[in-house]
Image (cartoon, rainbow, N blue to C red; front, side):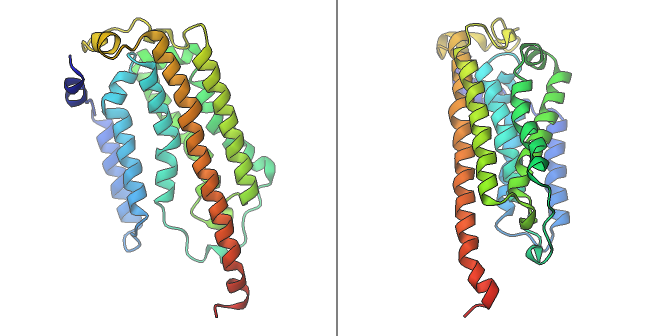
Amino acid sequence: MTTRALLLSAWDPGTVVPVACILALGAYGFCYRGRLESRAAFFGLGVAIFFAALASPIGVLARGYSFSAHMLQHLLLMLAVPPLTLLGLPRERGARASPPRDRGAFGYLGPWAAGVGAMWLWHAPLLCNAAATSPTVQALQTASLLVMGYAFWRPILVPRVVDRLPAFAAILYLFAACVACTILGIVVTFSPVEVCSAYVHPVDSLGVLALLRDGWGLSCRADQEIGGLMMWVPACLVYGAAILATIGRYYGEEETLPHAAGGAP
């Protein structure tokens, strides 16, 4: 098999993924009809990435063939789909007129632990191998990554603006997540033992193993190192972008405060 053939033929959407995408887009259009704006593009992009992560060659290779594809799929489901779809939700009108819900510092520990813990949990060798070889476990993994991803990103991107973490707390929240993912990435990258042994000797039912090993030069060691680097570098780039956006939001709000207090000139 060639790379071109892989990219063209290794698509396996099944039934659940397309139906989930159609239902999500339909529900979005129904719930926010009359309020659709430029934010709808974020939601549509999030749904498209969800489809690609599970139905494209990324999803196919993640099923026991390539650890780096498995890691890319995780990052898309945790760090792309949840924040993009949350960004696609219109902000609640008059949100600043009602008091914020005071959850306290410890009220956000659970969502943070869910977002970070999801990656650590599913890279325990037992669970990682099970997800790589069992469709049922993989479906459970996908659902848990999405749920935990939404739990993590909600305090940062919830549509009701006053319910979001204050800027300084949000920066600490995101930076701590970056540190935790960096540690996991380092552990995976430099681990002398295969994190997921299922990827060492995959069952090559599609005939793509020769392409991966010989055509791409993707040895088991290199595959694991690439996966670890994905968790280490791109993940922190996402958190870093969110930190910069939070800083920008903070200064944007500061500039509007005088107008909100004294009225626009």
